[in-house]
Image (cartoon, rainbow, N blue to C red; front, top):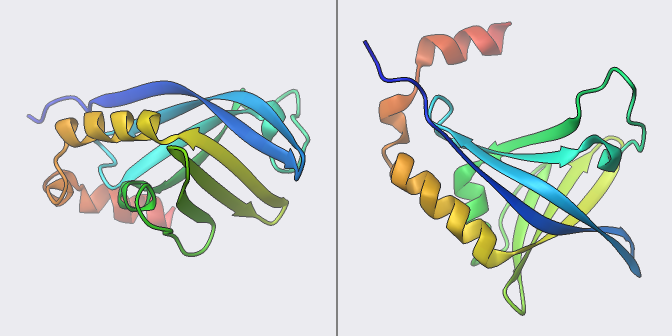
Length: 145
């Protein structure tokens, strides 16, 4: 019998670039689950969704899921292809760019917050050992629906 999955979670403050001259402060939840060892999650309040429409039946948050390795790499060098890009900024900040059909969101974080979260996730599952926790049958079932 395998151990129950572990979740590493951390709330951090971020700044969403609304326009080139205006930002909005928001609280973002960072989440890492050992039952999905290659991914990290960023959960944003629904009122900050890219389409701008938080429906009454919509969940209270919008979740973005992407590679933990991408977040780690983006702290030191511009990284990413496709929908998620991460790049370091001067002054100990990190920019996360999220792209969807509805638009692009630029969210700035304190790099120390992201490093602290990643360190905790690497304590839970060391880098390069994620494959030991992968459940290929479950992943295939989710992929095929």
